[in-house]
Amino acid sequence: MRKKIIYIVALLLVCVIVMAVVTYTMFYGTAVSQRTIVTIDGDISYAEQANSVKEVIDKDLAFDVYAWHINLTRGIEAGRYTFDAGMSVIDVARRLKFGNDGTVRLRINNALTPEALAEKVASQIDADYEDIIAALRDTAIIQQMGFDTAEAMFSIFLPNTYEVYANISAKGFIERMKAESDKYWAAEQRQEQLRRLDMTPYEVMTLASIVHMETSAKEEMSRVAGVYINRLRSGMPLQADPTVKYAVGDPALKRILYRHLEVNSPYNTYKYVGLPPTPIAMPDMAVIEAVLDYEEHDYYYFCARPEMDGRHNFARSHREHERNARAYHRALESMNIR
Image (cartoon, rainbow, N blue to C red; front, side, top):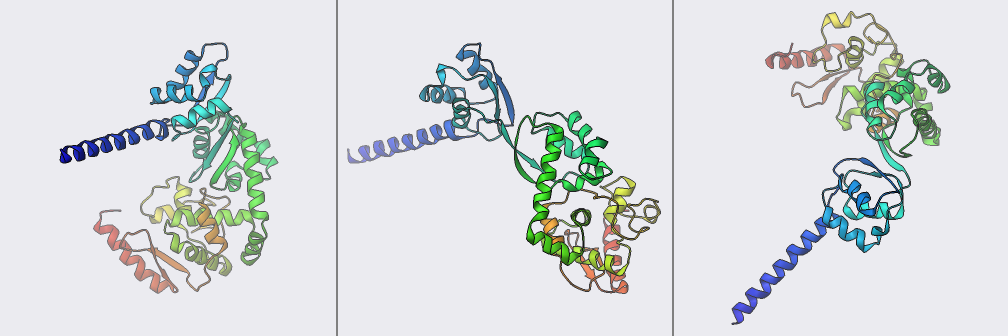
């Protein structure tokens, strides 16, 4: 009898735990799989309003229960509601109950071109791709921001997450990013770092875009930046492979050949001394900070390691660099990369 009681208690306990997990998942688990905007009509019944919401969530019963709990069934205020990916049933119902302030968390990063940036932004705000790319290419807007080309204006976009209104215009988005950029560079710490570098914010962003494309190893970003700064100060060509890839229009190019180095482009830093005319990508904040806090050393060369681990071997002399380069090229040939 005693064993039966223990078994029954244990079974009840398991049932309670399972029910608790199921209930928690129903109400607090993810109900919205991707960012969606739903327009609620004020002239239809609550049932019809709720059906509009249920089309974008996958927990209808939980929604009905919680909506009843917070008296949402009296009717939803008409308007446009933004539901972000990862929101729960409770999040959705409370947004419908207490209103939508119309803001979204806009995340921008790792765009290689204005077109790529426009695509990323269009997926998060109301403005569509055509409006955004048109604004990014609009000569009047570009000049208003103080630049000559869309590629040059690319330097104002700092990878981060920003809270903006979903209905922000394409031009308003650019103006907001310019204000964020100005604020970032106005900080006293940044001003001190710029003085140490003897560079403008635009030049830092251009150099950071090269370092961004050169290495993903965070621990060596400031060292790579230091190599390029040494070259700039000594009058050496940067000889940065990412700028050659940009010049030939192939960022995925695996191996730079002599014919690539002959391309006559201001972005070919094997031919032209100094920084390229514009950034070649949107650098991560970690890269920007690595350039601002570059490592002081006497390295003038670096080459990808033959281990192909994404890191580099650094050299002070050209002879040492040639040894590193031969080891790397042998590794490429062993992998049939030509």
